Length: 326
Image 1 (tube, one colour):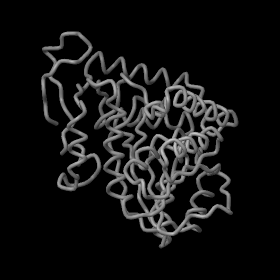
Image 2 (tube, helix red, strand yellow):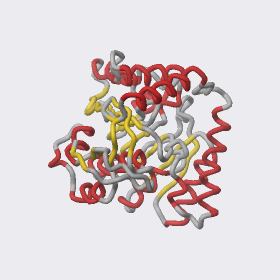
Image 3 (spheres, helix red, strand yellow):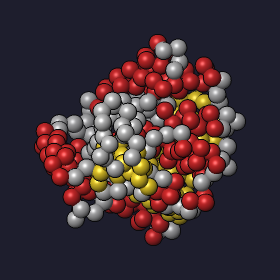
Image 4 (cartoon, helix red, strand yellow):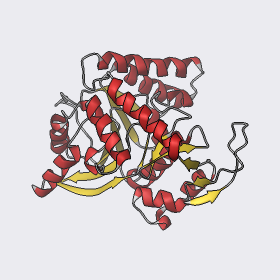
């Protein structure tokens, strides 16, 4: 990691703090590629953001660990419970309302669970970013690389669990010529997608789709890429119907960015706490294990599996899995 000594922008003096900075080489390591694989547009984006941070140690780190333990102990959220559908409907409706009332400001579509000014996880440490939007900017950098590297050759794009349309906006800006589909199980999400298409003239369409009970009449066009970002996690491990749906529809490429418990090291404290939080809430487990099984059965080709070693306070939500049906 490169080091720098610029002070934080919070008005306080931090002249004795040695800040580290996520460099292009660090992003390359995180994504599992050579630094030469980055296009110029990626370097331009990274250089426009502040990726400074300091690693927490001593009492500061202990306090964060204590807060995480208390959260694990007290948390009452149950992934996949019946009331979650109403919560998601209301959550995306809030994004839709803010988007509409702001005269269609797309920044209002950033999901509320991406919180600014938070301690985050980086390389199995707890770190304090200098930039309050560090998590969003890191995710945006990863997403930019991912969309350039893997989406450009396909005519049709499908996001399952598209939520606020946050990712679809970036894709439509990059690839206005492509046919883009946003699928979610609540109407407010589909309404956002319709608004985006209407306001911007994008070739984008929203669809109601339940990944636990897939619509067998829904077709996926030839020359298509299918992806999820933080959607399979919400299935509470009931992913088999969706996997079978994808195997039958046989898209050209499938991409998932999801918390992946198999990639943690339970002998590392920071990872162990993420495992505990993951299981306390009931996020999906064994999805990667199932993909590996399908590969041994010669049903899919598993192209890439990469943990980014980056995430929010309680867990890493950004591990990459890429595969295609055979």
